[in-house]
Image 1 (cartoon, rainbow, N blue to C red):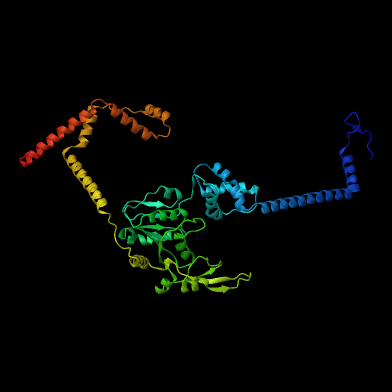
Image 2: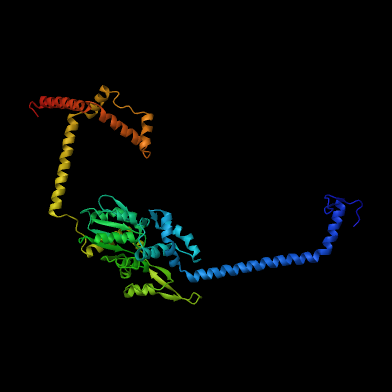
Length: 453
């Protein structure tokens, strides 16, 4: 390299400043001479990164195998439930708790936690075998419809816990596995005609629903019925409604099955449909010959070694609206459940007295309203005391200091009531005006009839 009068930028003559043409020529010459070395160095760096990634994967797999072999999902969930519950708060829905638990178990297992397994099996088992979870509740699923007061009770754990059955309103309960049938059956007023509460569910009855049925059964006169599809799930819904299950091992309620059964579907010549069964029939089900034939079906070769089965079923929707209502009524009649509710003599007598008192009270109020013009009394009081009530923004804002939960409307109502209560002689003024109007009305009546009323 030729560079006359080289210039250095430091006293040690290490940093050399050269013209750009010289620098470019030197770089080109150096690159050509060291290209092989550079390729080898880059390859060594790539090999090192590849080896590091392989070691990391091996460590991750070893850690995953260790965690999976050490912890089951159940063990991981049980280990973090109390921590998750404390973080979620005192009142917490099962699904909210599920979202709190899911990230916490990742320190113990990489297995995936499903909500159905968590809510239907793990939570009940934890509360049964480890400790209760105060404030845990399940969202409402399905609803109970009263027959005569139009009250609807959502079937959630909190709603059922607070529910008090009405006295002598109904003595029958019908569980229908499909919410969609509510509008179809409403015009027939089966609940009102038979003094029967109706539960419209969503398939299998939730724990809250079965707890409610157990509460009803305590009353000896209560009869409980179920209406379901003629399929595997329908039969299992009818069974689990009254029998013990893993989730409710002590549950035992006498439930009368109105159908739809397979023999009934055949008898009514209802339209059927085919479906593919992929799982074994529930071992607990007791099936008649027709149902066994429908639900067993014919094997289908799936090509994966495990056969499926082409089976037959019939749903309640195969009935027309009229046919379904008639089917339910026929079932109630078959089981002698058609009588209306009438309470014992003492209950009836007490109720009649209450109704009598209310009727007489209405009569007195009606007569007083005829004799006394209440609106005129109010107008006169306002005219006599224009400054009776003095409520402004400042007074309303003062009330927020002691009670920040109030709305301005509630605050105004409280202040008006305080001003009226504090007014001197207001009650006497009311009495005087009422007495004057009564005297005038009675004189008018006496003049019209010619005798004292």
